[in-house]
Image 1 (cartoon, helix red, strand yellow):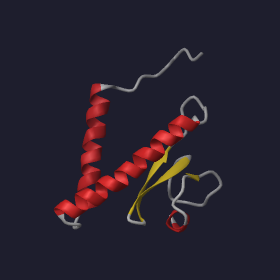
Image 2 (tube, one colour):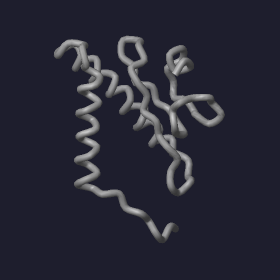
Image 3 (cartoon, one colour):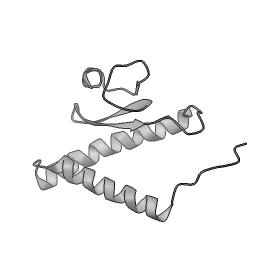
Length: 108
């Protein structure tokens, strides 16, 4: 987190001493402040993330930062991040319910 505060850029978490569990960290920022991190874990296939996937996740993290900022501005900053995280968690649960993950038993 210290490195992301100093340099809010996509961070390869391999070989970095951190409490973040995953492969890649994408900073969520707004108004120059680090608000959080989107962390991607390893793919079950072992493949690396493609550049277009990395760009899409980076854009998602940027959009989350803007959403937190707007949400906090409109509703007051007390608990804004927690309320937004709860909303994102609810959305994730709904997506998993509607589109359950599948396991590819016959990889190409």
